[in-house]
Length: 398
Image 1 (cartoon, helix red, strand yellow):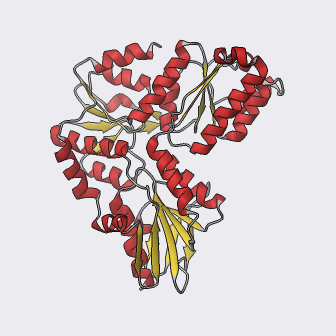
Image 2 (cartoon, helix red, strand yellow):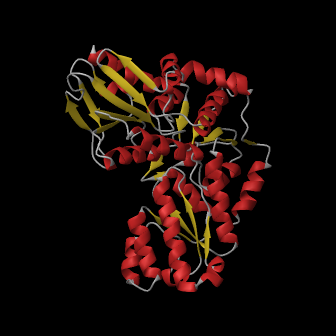
Image 3 (cartoon, helix red, strand yellow):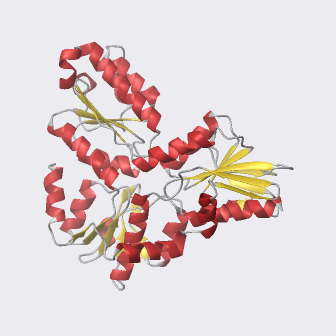
């Protein structure tokens, strides 16, 4: 599929909007009224620290809503204000945050349903308004909505669009895209749709497996079994790993993405030599600024003298999960929650999600005596949600 031609046709159809409908001032006010917090503003002004009684809070110096998420949420809200009577759909959650998505649901903005894991667009009619979420939509979904003559509101984060341009460049020069990401994640699904030949690797271990195969170590049948759901149709590792370009899901762990890029560069440098490396390897940094800043801030936060750490964000949020991984790697007791209601003041308990596990209840999670709690949040978490968590910690420690 000529993805660039499809995008051009959609963007010049007269039924496509990527800029929104309201002025930046009105947009900022509407979002601020819903999601900003005076408490968080004061903590920021106090060098990201807060003390009351026996409780000390240390906030990460970069956390919460990024500008791409703010833009997507604001555009979704103003779309309803601009189209007060039309049916409005989203191809998926606008962002990975339950409070935001519940708010949109109350505004009668519906998420397109799925049947057996496949989105069912049969309920979407000509003239309906459809919002593409911050992490994008597949080019096939865009084309279908275009053919249905829907009004398309595109809130895709520009950093995600940058990744799409990267894999399209790979495709143009007949390079296979090695995508560092989760092959089922909505952003990676969208990126795959813009790529030509591709292979998705989840982590450094999978990248090393691919590297070993490139170097002639491995069984083809085992390779294809391992990556059966994470590669393009007709993928042949003996053919499609000769020329590769690296891209990534924008919310992956920055350090791991960098390691994967260096690994493949070294692998192909060894195999083909310095004179031919540019004919066999392309790399671009497609980790978004906000993800990088939040991860760097988290590395600084875990260097503080903390008793526990609370990570706030959607349970299906990739960037939040990676913040949790940093805490675990540094041996800090940490709790991943999505909303403040996971904390019970009366019982001093927290219902949290350990990494790659089901929800778990921890009683007496705030220890006796003076306690220092580190707090961070994913890029889809509003300040108000963080403030609500802090208010509960204050109540427990009174």
